[in-house]
Image 1 (tube, rainbow, N blue to C red):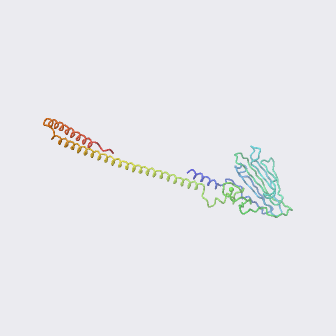
Image 2: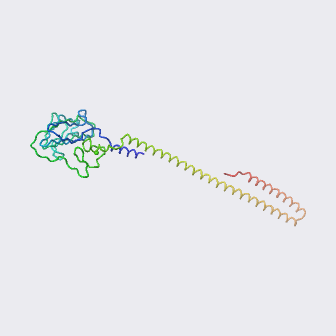
Length: 313
Ligand SMILES: [Ca+2]
């Protein structure tokens, strides 16, 4: 049961929806007059934890990008600048040009060719700031580099909408690895998948069925053990009764044999009287009569006791 819910939580976590927006991230200026802005999520109300947003700005042919960072305020409670803005004056392979978490005045940066790469990232601590906002535009340039800024992804990597490459195993794992929202690693997995509520409902339902199954199984096992114990008890009772009957039969046979022996003894005594004198014969007959009478009483008493003894169960 516990393992099932742990698995369910992992599964739901694995398909968690990213609760902020970076945009698709690849901004191609179609005309010389086109301009726009990029900002951290929820600017200026404050960005959430674990934000990862990456933008690739591309100017029209024969032009360059100009970016003006008008405001930047990251987590100011620490000096290590864990929530920060990064800017490279080309694509993501270009050298790092700026990295910072706070500006006191606007910062203007121009690309070397047609492209500018921007990233905003926050860590997992609760302390945050306003974030940043920057405005982009293009200006005429004598640069003629028309090479595509897009890095080719190898076959083992997924190409994000902001043209970043991430390993395929990062898809749908609940973390925004691409740095974009919309056709990115955590977006496509929501399509055709069950919602979190439905998954929880299915999990609770299956868990309940398993619980009831275990409950019924334990009940049936208990009934089986009781039935088996009753059967064994009945067998023991039957054996005890048979043993008691055999003892009673043996005792009756012993008494019968004793009575026969006593009769024989009496007959023997009667035969020996013939050889005695009159007075001795009278005395012997009296003793013999008393002995027979005593044997008869003993036999009757023994038989009475045997028959009146209850048979043990
Ligand atoms: Ca991911």
